[in-house]
Image (cartoon, rainbow, N blue to C red):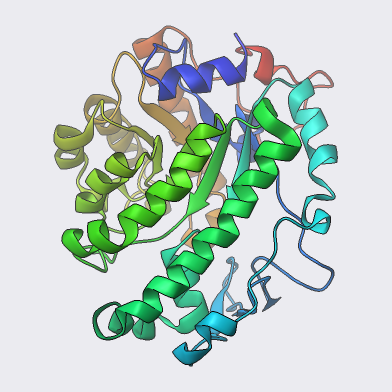
Length: 352
């Protein structure tokens, strides 16, 4: 069974033979992404200016950076502000070359949209401006959100028209929560954001793509909204902040979770007992015998203070869980510094 089959069976609750995973640190992944290429001198993250005109900076701690320069603080410019035109060929110039080896390995291919809606709104206008605008100048926020959705529909159409079913899913980011709650109430989210997400996600589903959405913070209430607008996979990397049992009671079997031992409360401690306890709790409350879980790494271990050893402990525990629940362990990890085998076969089936 290929990686494509394993991931799809997990998402569709069709009993995969093992947990699907994305764990590039240890050299194993059923999924692989292809990315749009911005014009020369433009960055997605780091230090510089991104395709939307937002200026990024980084701190002394290794991380992806954050937006420090918001080009649309004057909301009167929303209608005139130039948005990226993703229908242009230049954005797609490297996708074919990235796609070919992934197809050879028979992995599940993910296209991507970075900062899909809310994050893009506040990266353009500033966080406080957006929250105030939702209440004090809703027409301006509606125009901004609709223009962002229109731009990202061009991304979906580009994947559909240029690559068709060679793409299997679209991953997106929209962080929605603090440590205590979501940034906005559920009713406002459903009224303002849900119809716009649904328009975008309906286009993805119509093209044959699974919808993957990452969101940090305590977004317990919003996961109900994610389900209603068509999210297939919710990437939630702070399960302790969410409440593992609480989330499981409400959403287990209704959406596929993509997660791991908590990146904030657990992995940085390096403690085997805590890491393994998280894994077992996720197995009990978030996984089902039919599927509904994807094991995902947090790629920036240094930024969260998580050691490679902690991640290896976690990987081996999830492998035991995979074998116990589905019949097969995870592929044997490649430890940092080890050479990858000449014939990488994870996409074609389980490696032991």
